[in-house]
Image 1: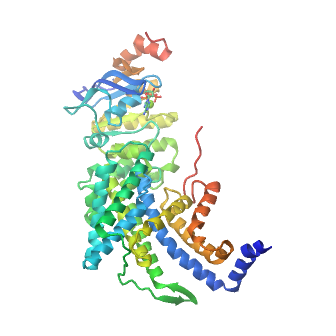
Image 2: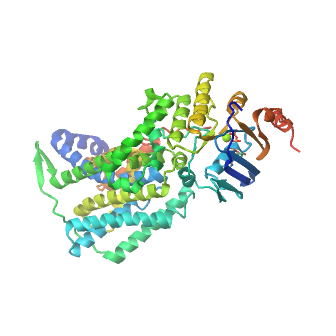
Image 3: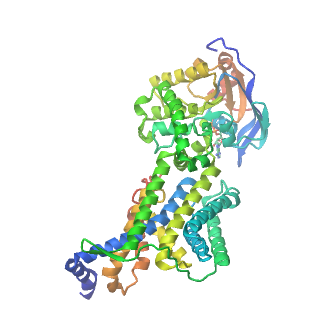
Length: 311
Length: 263
Ligand SMILES: Nc1ncnc2c1ncn2[C@@H]1O[C@H](COP(=O)(O)OP(=O)(O)OP(=O)(O)O)[C@@H](O)[C@H]1O
Ligand SMILES: [Mg+2]
């Protein structure tokens, strides 16, 4: 009876009493979800173009944020620091292609996955070595005041973050749909052999997707970093991208976006209304449980293609 | 030979090619020349090594032994990107299109190497890249007209019937304006009408653009009709090579197709 109260009656009651509050929680969650979407997007880009599960995506977010905030602290102007960090991420893509991907071409996916674990350790170490291991506050003057819109409380920063993420996604969509290089990227994602046969240079494509993933990581890193400070736990937050990917499907860009939003909103609502029943801190594991349930019922993800085993 | 054209010197010469996968010997010392402007048919029973041979020519497979001479340059193995850049285009036995993309976009990918500026450059300067794109669109529209697929220009190819997919795949290869066109069973799974259309396209390409064509085909009627020369593979070996009529009468070929045991 007590359990029934804690799991059903109390939360539903709380929601019914104050529906505006639910809306606030959902909106807050959606805006966090945008961050998850960005990280997941980086994963999907690399996975689609090269079949590599890039374990290092989370660290790329951290590394980009570290380079950015580090250069700011050295007194570099904002725009300069931004451009230089973009340049660093592109250079990183070149190095990864040359040193890691090219020698390992045609290896088993598991080997490439291990290689990305190697990249993770390398970037963690390099970041720490160059920029130090302390928590850095990042403030690039993004507005942070709470706003009341139609009786609902929203955070101005969250809105900005969502707008930036939206612009980024729209820009990427244009890039993929409207340029010949975007067409080449889609071709590689669809069929490697056929792409090779028309002479699409895989090496160039890899450099481009890793660069784009790095830049998406930078945007995510700036947003996260502004919220939480730039520190090593950023790389862990990025692990939330895994349940997002399971929800959205590993190869679907819309899936990454919708999956991120669902996880973000879902875990906030669960925390606020069902948290007390579990003694709190649901937020940390809710996404993984959601992903597990999803794996049972729809293993290909929301937008993934149905997997039918050939026998 | 269906017309009186004279065959040129070899455009590509594969010498003593041997290729194996673990214990499976897919090719055993095969030498094969493809001459300028000809239509060469490669035939043979299932598993004879026909597809493997095409894969060696365009660089998907790297043979353990042998050399390949293409346009006068001799190599141990081709590489796919290099093969494409030097004018070798191909289609696949199991249609390999970009399923999510439209017919138009699929054929446009064939133009990538013809675009003057590299991919990276295009990523940075969209304006001029767009102008160049338009010029290539014109070339692609010509191919679409030629293959009579105007009606499906904007349809994602994954939704097209198999016969049309094969045609789009030919279009993508033609968009590369290749010197050597490799076709792996271009008519497999087609009905009689579709086969006739495909034969006509192949002959027209060869005739109008002088494109050298090497094709794999199981339908003997088609082979006898359109090819200038026939090479026969069996168990990784070349057992015959010559004009269609001579090959058809060859005892070793007849035995291979009847499954007579190999000495
Ligand atoms: N990538 C590969 N890995 C392992 N074995 C292969 C590979 N490609 C081809 N083979 C083997 O090489 C041999 C020749 O195959 P190939 O595909 O070249 O035959 P084919 O003449 O094209 O046959 P089909 O008419 O059935 O298409 C077969 O035994 C095949 O199993
Ligand atoms: Mg074959």
